[in-house]
Image 1: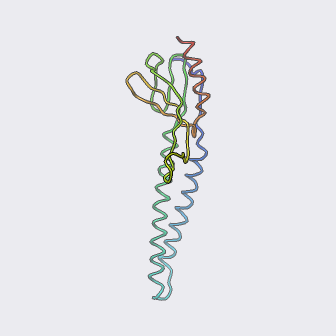
Image 2: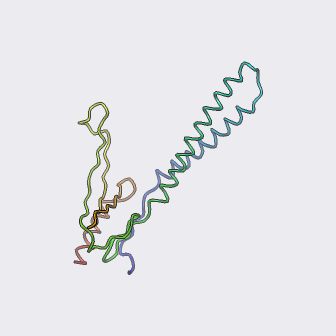
Image 3: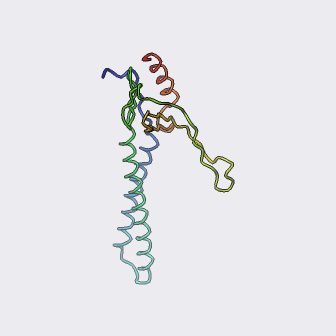
Length: 159
């Protein structure tokens, strides 16, 4: 195994922003829930304070779960390396001799009201091994056009 010819770093700016924003919301919601729970006021307001504390605690739980999954995503998405005889993705290494196909497909999400209209779409680079294992790389995290171009270029040289 030699030195990587090309290295493609993931773009995690959106995920990182979501992580920090959800952590901020979680801390603020927990602080608000504790403040409402501990505040002293008239007995008639107690039910409203407890309801507010409970709702803020639910916001805390949702924001914490969002932060955990955003953190997990930033750890899962890793650098893509292209070597002279293989490509290495976060899902493993594929030797060019085991590479069945590599293609870019557009994934469309249909509208709930009219299924013939696409609500949103994103492009995915799909690398298929001979045994059927697939490596999916999204345009949201990688420059898939550049990866595909370099992959084809190096694959031709190694053939």
